[in-house]
Image (cartoon, rainbow, N blue to C red; front, side, top):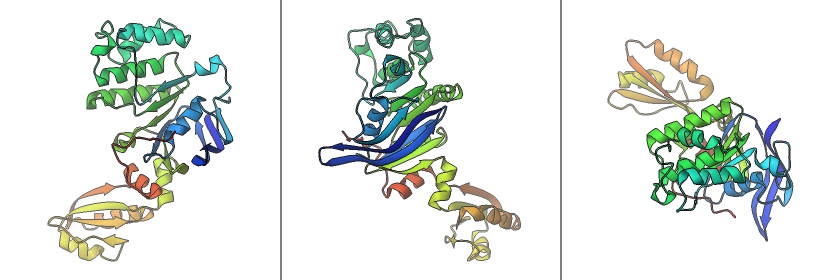
Length: 309
């Protein structure tokens, strides 16, 4: 079963179209990075998946059901962490999570385990008003994990987390997907998503302009690899000039060669034949940032937020 299927989905607010002809299928057990510029429609798409709003056109199915009319048992299968987490300041972390467990008809026996899982055991008895931004974010993740959901939607989930906690967060995500849970997360920090997600969904002005794993998107984009050969730069540049797409002028001890992806191995084999000139080789494939710029036609603003309705 697909976790999420969208077919020709559009959403209008009055005369404004915020989503237009969006179609995709997310298999179960995958982690999807939903990325796009300010106002691209990411938040609107998340609201549709959650069933908080209905599409103007098209159809969306989540875990085989229409999320807008699905009953309580369906909602127990879905976890959500909004970008701005809001809790009652006078409640403790433990009481907050227990309250959400009762709302979701989840076992309150999960509360202690989840607090430990997100590193809040020692702060469980403290009032939420004493929590830092990172602690609130971790408490939000714990409430999203209640009931062992089959689908999780996470909006800017690593906001306020230090590098160690970010790593721990993605370890939790990896464990979830390994167990079959589907995760859709939106973030502006593309470098942390690149090696940790299975599928990238790139949005631009309400349209889905790219959808697939990084290797597929690299092939579709046709972006080159950059190969840096260290050693006798001038001699290497002379030998490689014209043999590949473009040879960048050599620096003091290296030369950068722009190479079409299908010819990457040809270039590496050529360089191995210059052992007397080449002491080291570094290969840089097109990154998620590069793919985003290519498909969206713009660079992402790390501080931008999706203001779509």
